[in-house]
Length: 450
Image 1: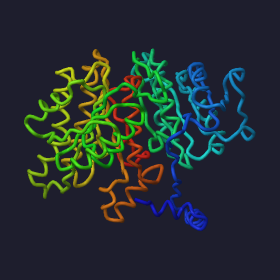
Image 2: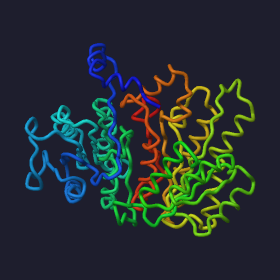
Image 3: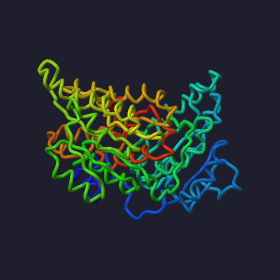
Image 4: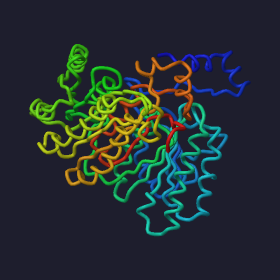
C-alpha cells in the first residue's frame, strides 16, 4: 500500500515542513528495474588496503565510472573532495587495519565523502573476520569495524546504505557476487549488516541470468513475499516449483503458468508431507526456499495451545522435516542452497508473538547449526530476517502501529516484498555458497534487535 508520509515528505510543501519541524524525511528508495545492465549507475570510489587490487579488477564490470581515493592513483582516476563527482557507490578495504591507531583511516576516508553521495548510494567496508586473527590487537581492530559501520549506516541520508563484508582467506574470488548485490539497488532495504564471506568452489557463469540451469522450490508461493521470490528467481533464470496449501491452488497454478513453472499443492504439516514432496521432485532441486509461515498472535497469558502448536508446526517443524527428507534422499543436490525465511522478531522478540518469535529464532539456529554439517556437500544454508515489509498483512495493522513500524529504521520506511526476494535470489546463486550459517536482516537497519 502507499506510504502517504513519504509522499508528503517528498512533496515541495512537505519537504519544507518536515525539515522545519525536524521530522524524519525518508526518500523513495531506488530499486532494481527490468532492463538495467550494470549494478552501479554512477561513480564508484575505491580506497584502502590490498583488497583494492581485487576490487579494481572487478570494478569495470560494475560501472564505467571508477575513481580512487587514498590509494594508488595510477589504478584509476583520482577523486578529489569537492571537485570529483558525487558518488553512487563506495568500497573501502579496511582489512589491513590491525592496530588501534590505524582506525583513524576510517575517519580520514569517509569524512570527506559524507556530503558527496548520490541519493540511494551504497557503501561497503571490507575486513577480515576477527575470530580468524591470532593477534588479539588485530582482532580488536577488526571487530571495531562493526561498531563504526553500524553507526555510520545510521548517519547516512538520502536512502544510502552501508554494509561490512568480512572476507575470509581464499574467499576473495567471491567478492564480485557480493559487490554486485550490495552496491546495487537489489540491496535497497538492507543496511548496517556484517556478512562473512568464506571460500566457495562454485561461481556464477552468466551475470545476466545467474540462476540459469537451477531448479528452485519455494513454499508459501501463491501470493505476497512467496510470489515475489518466485518471480525474482525466475527472472534470474531458475526453473521454479511453487508449493502452497490446497486452498491457494487457483492463485498458485496461475502464477506457475505465468512463470513457466510447476505447482504443487500440499499441506506441509501432514504426516506424509515429506514423502509426497520427494515423490513430486523426481529431477531434484538446487535451491530450497522455506517461505511458508503463519502468525497466531496473543500474549502468552491468553495464548491457547492450538495457537502455539500451529505456529511451531508450520514455521519451524515443517522446514526441519522437509529439509532433512530432501537432503537424505539427495533430492536437494550437492552445492545446493537453502534459504529460511526468519524475522527480526526472532532476533529482537515482539510482544504478543512468543510463538512466532520462537519459531523464527529456531530457523536462525537451524541455519547456524546445520551449516558446518552440510559444508562437505557444498550446500549452504542461511536465514533472511525481514523487518517491516509492506504486505496485505501489514496493511491491516492499526494506523499508529503501522506508522511506528515504518519509521523505526535508519531508512525510515517499510520494505517491499521485492527486497526480500532480491536477497533470497542472491543467496541462491552458485557463488553465494561463500555465505552460510548466517542471518541477513532485511529491515532498513531497524532499531529493534542487534
